Image (cartoon, rainbow, N blue to C red; front, side, top):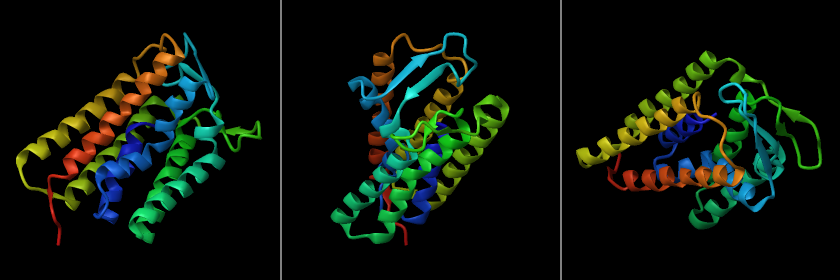
Length: 217
């Protein structure tokens, strides 16, 4: 799943306006932000499937430290602890920790059975939503568009420019999602890792947008 993760990040803003949208995006995408680093370092492995169907042209050979259920929970707990240590906001810390774990849950729905339960186990799971392209588009779009609507009900920007910037970011995310149905396998896993790190652009972009909002009463 891709835009669905961002959709949950947008929705979270409604639950607690204290936190920047950038922080919510960081939590929702945290596993996918770790994975490119681990891939580049050689700690996790993937390989292209040249004739694979859309969304399934990459074999996630091994990614136990970023995408096992065990480590998803560990990263979620650590994310929440670090945030609590800085802010002392218990409820928000739980919310952010859940967002980290939610990434694995949404991936479980979409992936083929390649998600490990734990690093020491060979058992892998996945409900294979990617086998059904129309259903994938519909479900991800509902989560994403719903998140946009909820987010816009939660904030009010001081000027028009942040609204424009926000919608440009949303259109770009949607464009990347649609293009994933037509993208060939990456030329190398190192390249894939560096491309994956480009997601940080959306994190910093979201921080910049959220600074322009008016306080809500």
